[in-house]
Image (cartoon, rainbow, N blue to C red; front, side, top):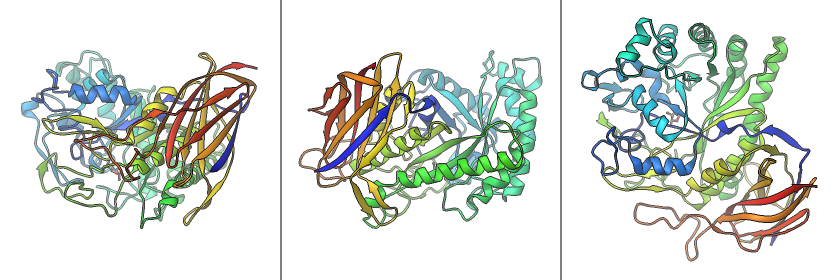
Length: 510
Ligand code: AHR
């Protein structure tokens, strides 16, 4: 049996939970849009082609904001192709994913879907092949009330009211050699600065996100952020970061401790932003938009029934990177969300990539069903219950050895305190593969009256840690976590091996 002690003090808070950290991402890639959120003719599709079965699952998952339309896709995309009468929209080659883009789905369709899904839109502009003019024109089209060429075009296309999109990404992964129109930090920094200015001249209320590094292993990581922020600091609000993780060479211990790398990555980006702030004598604070993160099996696991590689060849919506997630992946995703929440004082937006089919918590089949992958559950419960103040947990845990990160806590935690509803929510990832873990949560300044809810995701009986949910069966989900006790200031519970759990404690101020 492993052991962990967690202390939560009502005075040790990091501020309000930024609800935008429970974001997601819809890219024109593979089957995320077509046969994912949109499939005219599907038995569950409504009159506009939106799949209601997928929308129901999105509602359960609870994303607050959704980034659109890419991703690598956006760096070769002309937004004008996706507006106006559908029959007049061009078919295009999407060079990023070697796919035919029909443009049957575009900005108006996404806005309509976002309303039904009750999510905020986070729109990315193309700073790969395009520039300042297309950027400001898109803001005019989307956000200007009317009486100008582009705003009147939107109205003529059926949207009388402006879309009022607040969040804008200034391109995508332009540090990457794979990116269409990739740039040096200087080239991108200057372009982003000018695009941001011009976009704000059209609508001063928007919030802007500059492109940071595609991952912390990029050779330009650090220097990219420094240069880009030096040019853009006064014009933007957030710097982005992206990270994808996977189990490599059977090193499950390191994979389970991935959140250590996420902590390091976030703290490095924050430190770089603050250094630029100091050097430039800036008053405002630039925060972090972690706008692509997830588990993604980029290496290995490429089988015909689980295509993880880009195997498309000028087809419409081919199957791309439809990773099938297992129990281990769900625990890692839970701990990545813990890391994001623990940094909620600086990470103000985060988007799990992506929403449907493409490395996604939701899967759907053309003409067939939709279902929840294993990684659906930690996201859904954290989005639902992480409310109020972020508590800073003091964790004293048994440790496990990892090849990549040295020793790591066997139990990983994050917590929130919702004063209005008198609830503390504790989110726990257990990295131990063999033994259970006894966890003692000590509350300071709060007393526990009752356990309102306790659920756990672990390896289903008789199965192993690679168990996944498929079209045929979905054995991995949440079950009640029995035996959780609350006694004044102390809550005790036992986590099964390799598990993720949520515990909701009814509390009163002591
Ligand atoms: O989410 C899949 C891809 O990963 C995105 O298009 C790109 O931005 C990233 O490299």
